[in-house]
Every structure is written in structure tokens, then in C-alpha cells.
Image 1 (tube, rainbow, N blue to C red):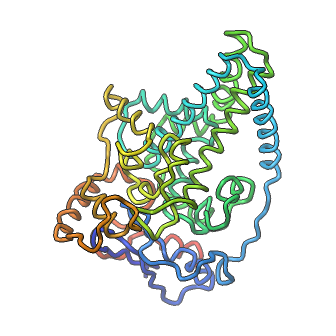
Image 2: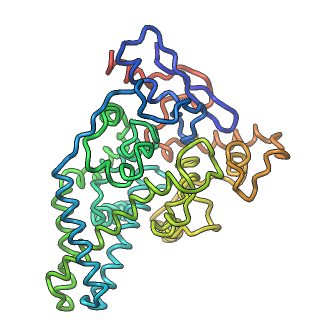
Image 3: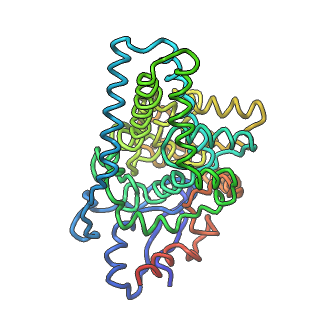
Length: 412
């Protein structure tokens, strides 16, 4: 028998309940870590809260973190070079052209991550032509945050098991860990186990993505190190040291920390107008420094929405960029939550901080209509393929054909 049943809830759509018959000792150890997570394509809401506040209590898997000293050394070198470059900038030792070039490379690489790798390849929030895919491969490589395939696998894992031990950067393990410490340690056993079962078939069918995966380090040397550093030297005579310290080290360090704030600040400090029972929050600070990725409570409530936030109300430069690509025909079939869906979530699950929150007088007579709109939107599964749907009948009640049978086989 499967280890879990997917059940539907009105509007909020899904929650999970585990049914275990004669589980192995290993299963008894693993299941408490994940029992409160959903496995749906609509959101990451925990429909059943975990009664324990500390995710590292004695009943969970015993795990001793192991430091990866090779990564520690690389980060020491990176931050040394980054702060050295920042010091040269603040002491006016860089030419204005080098400074402008550094900003340009930072902007392009960040958008390659946020628009291309995150919203397009990972969440399939819209469709795109080959030119867009090629541009994403180049600019995402420039960002230097691993290849699209591995980054997407980890991010889909993050959404599927958000803030549990199966989350690569579980925010409940502390601020430093979810900010950058997770890159300095060996992965938790649950991350390795569940990561093997993330559906990556869509990316495996993308020739450009698999080419990047195969030749990533060579492409990284060219697009993240070589071109950013050599352009100032050859075109306006910048010194080699300045060319490496600013467009590479300083730019790389600052863009990494900008991305990491999404995992740390946007899971710690803010409000939860769309889903009050999950860790992600709305953060103006993170939204500003990450081109619109700080509206994280919305994003985890509607992960397939290309806007990653309520468009038009707040800072969200990446959404404007997607709209521009759509205007020239490179992007199309943009997915977004309707106002009715957003209002429904705000009044059913929000913490009361949204301007449209009105739980006491909210008329839910149209719930069935909203639900039908959700079902219609989700019929095209291509937009929500990020490893979270373990049920074929997402609005019915049925035992998943796969689900935690995978886990059951792995730990039996």
C-alpha cells in the first residue's frame, strides 16, 4: 500500500495524510520529517501543521553536518577578492567604464537566473522559443550558480519539501545555513534521497540544457570569468587586476548574496498575506535587490505564476522583462493567477495583511467557480512541472501511483 493519500481541500486544494502499514524502522524515522508537506502543483501550503516547532528533535533522523572544506576555501577566496574589488571601487581606483560594465554583467546574469532559470526552466511559468533558451543558457552560466539542470533540480526539491530536511536550504536550520551555509556542508540524507526522485524529464529533453550540463565548467570559464574580465582590458585598457576584482569577484560575490537573501530573509522576516502556514514571506527588501523575487509568500502560493508576485503593485522588474520578451514573440503562454484565485487564497489562507482581506464577510458562494478555473488552468501540466505533483487526479481523492512508493522501496 502506498505510504500516502492525496486528498483535495476546497480551493486550497491539497493536503497529504500518510497511511503506513507495518513500516520499517527506517520509514518510522523518515516519515515524521515530511508528514506535513503537500505534494500539489498549485501551491506549497502546509495544510496540516507539524506540531513540533523544532525540526531537529530527537525523533528525526540523526545527522551530523560535515563541512566541505574545499567549498569553504573557494568562498574565502571569492569574498577576499570581492571585498578587495569593493574597496577599489570605493577608493575610486576603477574607471567609470569598468563600473558600468560590472553593473551590466551583474544585471544580465541576475536576470538570466531569475527569468530564465527560475521562472522559465524550473517552474515552466511560460513557454519560449529557441533564441530565448539560448540566451538563458549564456546568461545563467554567467551567473555562476551551477548549471540549469542541477539548479532546477534543487529548486524543485525546495518547493516540494520546503523547510523540511529534504529542502537543500531548509530555513529552520538557521539563518546562516539557509543563506549560504548549505553550500558549505554535505547534503542532508533526505536531500539526497528525495532529490533522486525529482522529475527532470522536461529538462532532459532540452538539448541546450543538457549541453550546458555536460560542458558547464568550460562554459563557466568563458562566460562567467573570461568575458567579464577581459572586455575591460581589451576595450578600454583597464588593468588586469581591476578587471578581475570588479566584473568577476565583486560582481559574483554581490549577486550570489542577492540570490541567497531569497532563501534567508524571504523565509524569515516579513508577512504572509497569501498563505500564513508556510515559512516564505513577502519582503520588499529582497524584492528590490533580486528584481522582484522577494514576493515569496505569493510565489510559494502560486509557484507557476510567471510574475512571482501581484503584478503592477510592487517592484518586480523581472516580470516586465518577461512581458517584453512576450511582446517580441520570444515568450508566450504566460501563466498567472486570476484576481479571483488570489482573492480566494488571501481570504482563506492569508494572515490578514493583504488589502483585500475580509475573512468575516467573505462570500465563498463562488468557491466552485474558482475551483473550476483552477482546474482548467492546471489542465495544461507543462506550466507546473517542477516535481510537486504525485497524483494524476489532482482534484480527486486517490492513492498516488508513485508518490512515496519510491520512498518505501528505498527504505524497505
